[in-house]
Image (cartoon, rainbow, N blue to C red):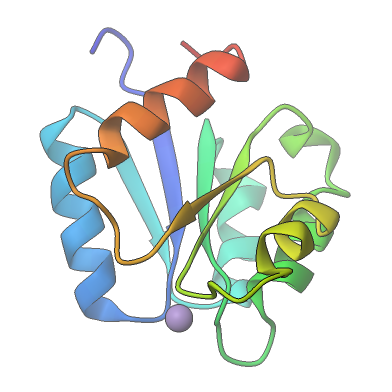
Amino acid sequence: MDNNPTILYVEDNPENRLLIRRILQAEGYTVLEASNAYQAIDLVKTENPDLILMDINLPEMDGYTLTARLKTMPKLSTVPIIALTANVMRGDRERTLEAGCDGYIQKPVDVDALPIQIIRFLKEAGHI
Ligand code: MN
């Protein structure tokens, strides 16, 4: 990949972080990680991710609330936030979109499909 887009993955589960990090690094992405909402909010003050993968079930502040908060930050206005969640009950997809998420990827992650989904979201946002 030419200019190594940066992806921030917000996820409290270390095993999930390891899996996704391996997939994304193998595709040439720079990967930033936050294990909770407050880390994510701190990180985006100094880093400039091209895309954010957002776990929904996070401790203290959930991914819906965090997404809504990040979407108020002008520097993130063109950064797609993609919900990554095992919440498959009816209405969950709608709820991620209401919170301001730009898309939705269901857990468990399909490791072959993930890179294709990421490229699609980056292209839609004009980041590649
Ligand atoms: Mn979680």
